Image (cartoon, rainbow, N blue to C red; front, side, top):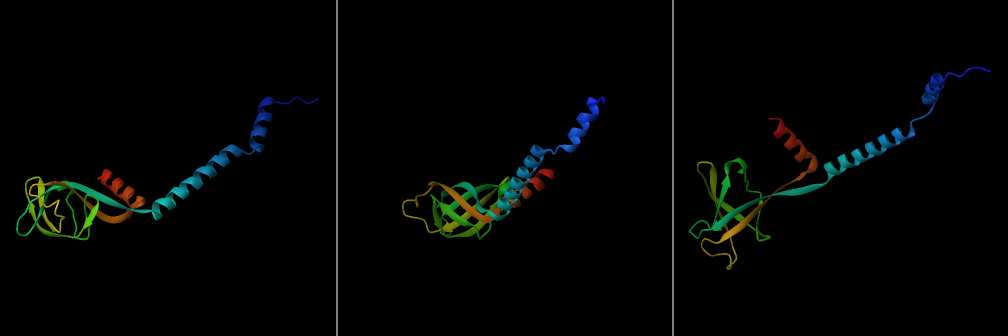
Length: 144
């Protein structure tokens, strides 16, 4: 009889045996990552900016919003929501103060909201974006 070396036998057995569990886990993870990538590219959603403003009844405007200068960019194509109701608005003027902006907006408010110094929650709906675009923005912002 031949002496079988245990170390050589185990090495040959490992070389001949297919690592099926590792291959199956790698395929499952790669399929899930591809699905996540596709969903993050296709799925679109809106981003909202929430502010607190108050009603200031004057001749040319009726809402005054104070916004921090770091988060200011408000464009004309955003949609304005007050108490989950959509309004058309017009930006009357923007005054830059030290550390913040005063934004004066005119919109047709309901009669119950048209009270002087009435505090309201103002929400601007920005353009639609995807999860991948927002992730890239966050990464670029974090790197700089």
